Image 1: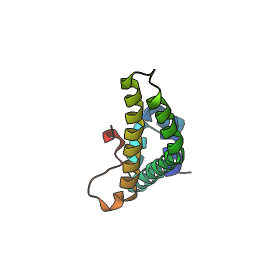
Image 2: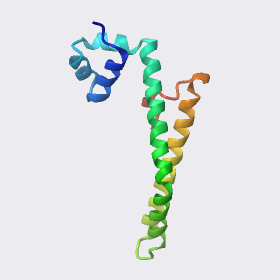
Image 3: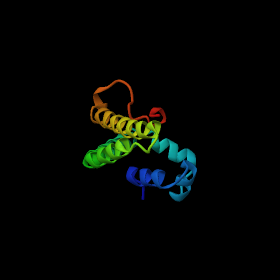
Image 4: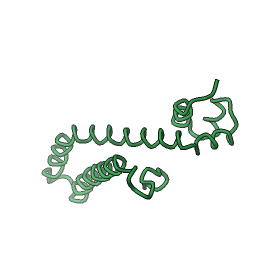
Length: 123
């Protein structure tokens, strides 16, 4: 029975290296890389990444007011150094903005010439 793209993606996500994923699938590393280069696998991988980003962004949106309240509490506490108060606020705002942007790009990736879901180029 042929290993499905879903099984390959699950193994790749579950293991720290592609070599370990290949071993768990009882295939060679070169077979794994060949399968991972197939259009069907690439499409599945992009869909999963896009869905994950949208889900994560949704969770952040749901918790944004709570995070803002925490930041407000930190910012209003004059016992905290200014640098700590500003760093906390900037970190949350920056991370939310980046994830929201990536989710938007993921939704429209099929119309773009470059590959915005190339995780090697995210950070």
